[in-house]
Image (cartoon, rainbow, N blue to C red):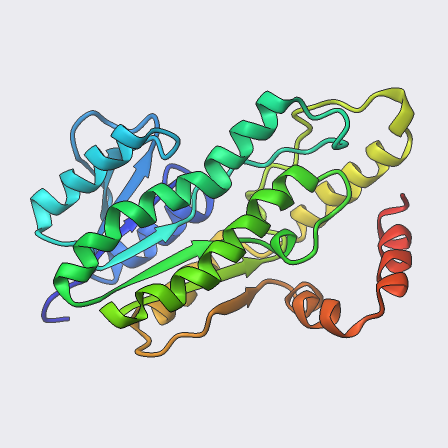
Length: 267
């Protein structure tokens, strides 16, 4: 490519973020991955560069974005990938855990969007890709707090897409199903009131994740979205059934959907 795009990827120390950064870096893009425990100074990590950025902190996001812009003069693509997975009955999840989840899954992405939009507007365009989940379309039992953050991200993305289109900024959201690197652990343990349903559901989630898509497969999708002149708003990703969840939710009667839910997760 003549002028490689500058790409910011949050949560790039492991999993999807790291796999995507490695893929795009190997393809010739100027990729900057972020981590809250990243190096103090930009450091080459294979085909991409890691920087420190805590997306739950305004000053850290500004510093990270300023660092990239100072080195490259622009940011063409922002992939808001970082996430936190909280599992537990809503009654038992502490307010502190809920706030931590929302700070990462929603407010973190919002902070990055607010930081990169002025740069993209000044450059005449850009691409923002937000990482949601099937859980941002259909909230799963015992993952309600996680779903709340992803539902909020979906709503923000829909509005943002319309607001910034006049500046040539394209906005999309990816809704993956199970990915093998996900960590479906219980942050807030269930009280006896929710047993045995809670433990059974968590075991099913963990089994599904072991059969999930490898994170390496998402890099080509991100590359397709960021290079598309007219990308879609929603992109499903994962096994066939999970990719159909958004459609099935729209056409399935609510009572039937809830019954299927209870049967699937034995809750």
